Length: 377
Image 1: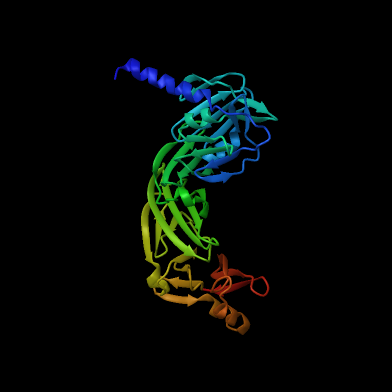
Image 2: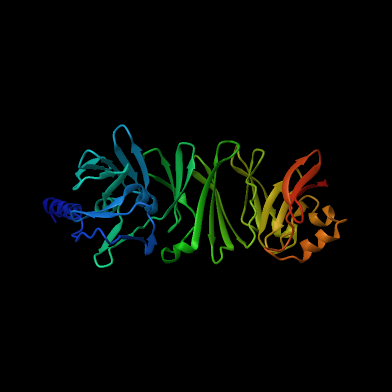
């Protein structure tokens, strides 16, 4: 096929989606928006004007995972997706896609300080599929990207929940793919998965990402994915599954990074990013299940088996193991009975590690009455 014919076809396609949908306007009937088969609430309603469907830019962009920046002085909006960057100006019908100007017909509108754009233009320019159902007044958008994001200094990390791709974004630049997580969320059941992403700076300036996927009914299951990065290159990835109980694992101790897959504990020197030590948690704790890591000292670990739920002090060098509640509450039979017999909301004790000071471990407990308790090493 000649270059001339290819160019003609491309121009025809561009003009086709710029024309917009052929729609009979009905201001009385509200418009429904579906993204990947799920009805979405926008807060600001789409509307139809002169045969075009207009959508609130920021609301829809956030649903589709786009990043939107508004330049007040230039009255211009920048929309950033995985592969495309659009710049729209409220006083112009020209859009700039990846540095190239294209005519936008009609142009965007400012209504009550909110930006509205023609649906087909913004969605197809960003690579999503759009369908309009005239009878039900339903907009259906199918996107290949369902993004979860975390801010980090002047940048962001993005994860595509559908395939686990990991991206790094600086300012208004296009995202750069830097790796892959093990997360996979089925599109048809995506609402059953509540995914969050956190980016933390480690002691020596590296990055630790924690990606939590809470799922099932009534949300009792959680997968935690941790990704350790140096210069945006993956040093280590772990995944651990927890059921019913959720405790926050420690992630750094002094100049060390601590990661777990539930069965093993990995300790990295954050300066060199080299593995220092690896611990077998099942061997140390004696329970063949996944463990939480709640504290770490010079010669001890504080670990908790997920289902048994009892906080243990273990010493890897001597193989010593102490179920802490038995020692701390040995003179309190009522608490002992509660921790051993109660299974609501989960089994085990409620000891929460606070700090180590002068050879003493301090904990909080809230059963019966909240107070601070201690255990001498």
